[in-house]
Each structure stands twice: as structure tokens, then as C-alpha cells.
Length: 138
Image (cartoon, rainbow, N blue to C red):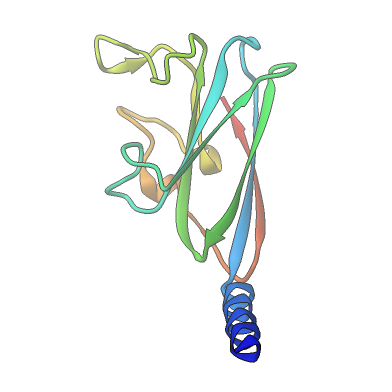
């Protein structure tokens, strides 16, 4: 009986180790101040970009900089978006529902031209137990 338990646990651990998991480090710079927090989302598709995060993190801002780390990220294509939640209300504040009044940024520092940044400009691929680092300028 004990032998079966050990064999099962060994198999489970082997599967977990073999499953490639990646790490994404996100540094954000150029905040106007240290008020509030930064909200960071990791997205998995164009349809979900800026709407439904695969993973989300937040961080305090210190000396107008902040960092978050996403761990255990499966191989795939992703994009990152962040915003300075200066009033800590959990939402990107908008003027007339169209123009952000809080600073924001995306992976690859994708531009926002006549609307929000585009998935195709912000996306990147990660695989094979990789660690990727991004610096996003707000």
C-alpha cells in the first residue's frame, strides 16, 4: 500500500516538474507620483485584451517605480496592461467614458492611437521555462 502511494506521488511530482512554467517580470517607470497602486493584468487573447485578465497583480509605487512578477505562466502568447490606480478604486478612471485620466501602459510599450492599445502591438510569446522581463513606461 505504501509503495502505491509513493509511486503515485512520484508520478504526480514528475508531471508537475515536466510541465513548462514561465515567469514574467514587469517593471513600470515614469509614474507622476507614489499615490495609490499600480494594477497589472496579463491577457491571453485579442478578445480578452483589456477586458478579462488571465492573471492580475497589484503593487505599491515607490520612487515613481513599481514591479510585479507573474509566476507559473504556461507556454503561450500574452500581453500586459497596467494603470496607475491613483485613487485606489480598482478602475481606470475615464473622462467622458473615453479618455483615461490615470496613466497606463502596455507590454512592448504599444501605442494608443485613436483608441486603446492593440493586442497585435502588445503581444509576445513565452515558452520553455523562460523568464521574460518588461519595462513599461507610463
